[in-house]
Image 1 (cartoon, rainbow, N blue to C red):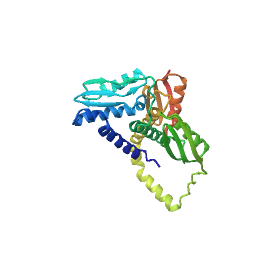
Image 2: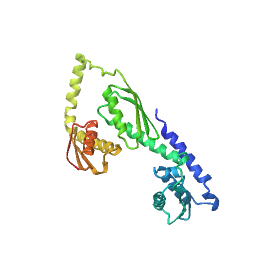
Image 3: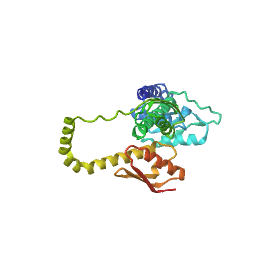
Image 4: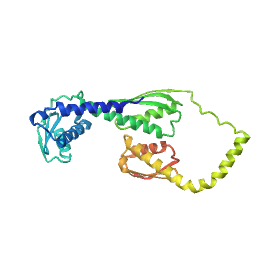
Length: 295
């Protein structure tokens, strides 16, 4: 179903091997320390994860706290960004930025580290979509496989209704990092089985069990509601964070007895409407109050 993490692990291993064994940086100075190698890997990995630098095949060599950066970038701002990333690595004291600004430099997305970075992005996107689908209260009966490649998402499996299929597509489409969505979900004839009437003995047993546990339920009701509210708040925040079009860090979320309150600041009415819709979609939410969510 979803085998991306194993592939990522393999790619990362190849990438690290290429960096530590194949980089020219190791040819000019023998016996780099473990710290040197760790810092080189940290810089190069951050370059690979950064969408503005991953296509530039930049290299970093570190010796005794001095980082030498090489490669080509199309704009000066990319060179500055590469410089600041290296400067932020713990233990780097000096930077020799030899990166060349070449406006004619063609992006190269075929490097092992660039591919690894895109793989991390795709894995993150897949997990975000699967989480949003799992937390939604409108997608019962949905059996979905999510795959992502280069930001292009494919949904396959079954949905209980056309509405559930369309909602799954919308949830995927407004997820960060998604370029396009191919919704291949098939609407099944899923119908929940009707509840069977209990037999007399079953009814007596159930009544006895209910009487035994009523006192415990009364004591635990408050704690259970707190847990439920905490879960709802966490899922609403996470779904906002995963979604495009909303400033998740500027929106506050609180929940009491399933009623969610949104506060904070958004850019416009569209963002406010989207935030409310996202909150309403989360399983367990009974209502959303957004009077304190301003724009």
